[in-house]
Amino acid sequence: MVLEGLKVLSVERKPWEALVSGSIYVFVAAFLSLVLFPESASIVSVLLVVVASLPLVYDAIKFEEKVDLKYSDEHHIMEHHKLFVWFVLFLFLGFSLGFFILYSFLPSSYVNQLFSAQISTIQSVGPATGNYISLQGAFFSILFNNIKVLAFCLLFSFLYGSGAIFILSWNASVLGAAMGNFFRESLSKMAPSLSSYFAVGTLSLLRYSIHGIPEITAYLLAGLAGSLISTAVVNDDFRTKRFYKVLDDSTDLILLSLIFIFVAALLEVFITPLFF
Image 1 (cartoon, rainbow, N blue to C red):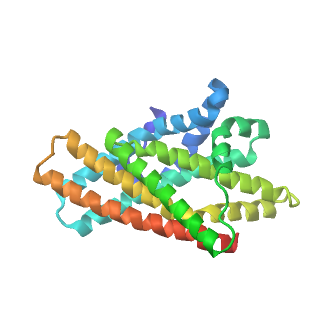
Image 2: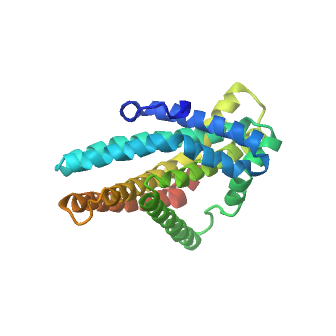
């Protein structure tokens, strides 16, 4: 219960608290998974992060549904949804930062245990390089893959209420591993110093943040949409004006998430490689 102690209103107004809490969740989950389940630490750590953060995310979604039903002004509703997105985005960034720190500074033996599944995922995805034709292919491949993940966020949230938090936690672990791998490889080519740690760490974060932030925002919007519909169905609002109001709001969120997914794919294929 200690890790569930945050309040929704507090973290929505001060999202940096969610960032710090997200990192703490990761550190605790990593320690427990390495001690108790060393052979399955890469998956168990993600599950423990989900367990710790799920009550807070669930309360936030319930709060968003109340806003949906209380106000009729779509602008006001979207303004409040923006607070939710910031809160979960900072929570995701906290997860990613925690996994990044662990990958970057733990001994290699622990890294291999804690990130074995994530490393396999990263190795299965090749970088987007080459001529315009191949870049086009990479763009559509990344776009369709991201749409697939978005669809799973929507489905998981509809079926399990806050189910998208598992997909977000897993993506945070993969992102943290990718940033940590870039950090370790880059640092191995430089003389170790405080300035080199800072420079390489900043580059590691920027390399994946350019396209990663809009991509994760899309998943958050889709997850919120699915959760709102799920909660409305569970509360027996089906075929009432309240349900159609929630459905209309959720449709707007899904359309907005598709825009973010499209922009994220463009950035990942055509913009990020220009700088890294």
